Length: 325
Ligand SMILES: NC(=O)C1=CN([C@@H]2O[C@H](COP(=O)(O)OP(=O)(O)OC[C@H]3O[C@@H](n4cnc5c(N)ncnc54)[C@H](OP(=O)(O)O)[C@@H]3O)[C@@H](O)[C@H]2O)C=CC1
Ligand SMILES: O=C(O)C1=NCCCC1
Image (cartoon, rainbow, N blue to C red; front, side, top):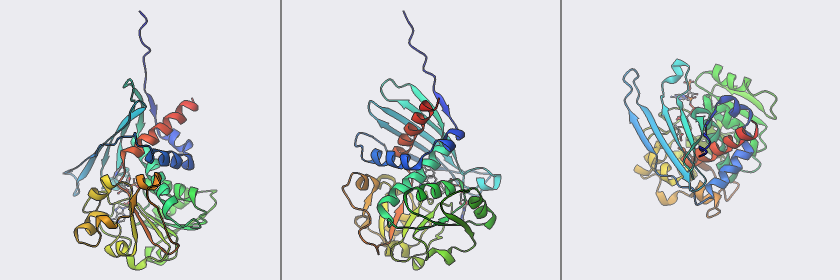
């Protein structure tokens, strides 16, 4: 008898992500994914656990998703919020990408890179529905692993000519700008959010801040706010006034309504009602609901991350790997 072929999973690491991420294509794949009803995503496990050597809890996320007959996967990531002081990323982990028919493991992917690419692309997908089409300036708040990817993703879908970066230290903001060479936009490190925030079209915020950095009093008509950090109920990046002035959208109702202080705090204090939330990405991508409806509207997009994004991105990078072998 002939034994079945040994299926050896491929190992996908940082260099492939770096050289093979076409944001426009990944954004389009995510749009198709959010409009594909067969993909199933159970509520993720979100466990906060004490981290005695630090003064802050860490978080463990277990994120499965499956597209029956096609593929499946599960991400295991930790968030260690004090890692900046050890020069380590806050998000680390692994993604196991599976064949959904026979169950074999097709690939093991580095989850830090997978997460930065898919999260940035998801923000840009939301922006494609929510920001003004003529948006020409972007303020990036945060200088971590996501910052550069968010800049690449946002600039891939809008005619942005000016990017500003704010971080807790100007050196880190400058380092983000220095890493963006030969781009079609200028990049300027800034020392005060307040100085620039009212003058830009898109504001993207990806930090570990427990308290708001974006205040509604600074927001102007027509702006789009992209909030990526605040992954726990006691964290937030924007205040109640930002909610009051905006049309609110979520990545998904499943996680968005439960996990982030940017939504849970205003829901609990009565500033926001569930029925005020305009749409999530499933509804925007399948055409059930509209995004921006006027030039003057301020749009507020809050993401916490969803396993569908990981499955779609794992499939994208797996196919890139196979076609570049
Ligand atoms: N919505 C989603 O789908 C996802 C969300 N995330 C979240 O996005 C955020 C950014 O992720 P990532 O870039 O990978 O993380 P990094 O650890 O690489 O970077 C964190 C950034 O946050 C800054 N920061 C930390 N504390 C504060 C504070 N109190 N005020 C202002 N800035 C602060 C850090 O500044 P400094 O360098 O000075 O410490 C750094 O710029 C995290 O909260 C993460 O959990 C991540 C993945 C997916
Ligand atoms: O992968 C995700 O999704 C994450 N969401 C919130 C914080 C860390 C990672």
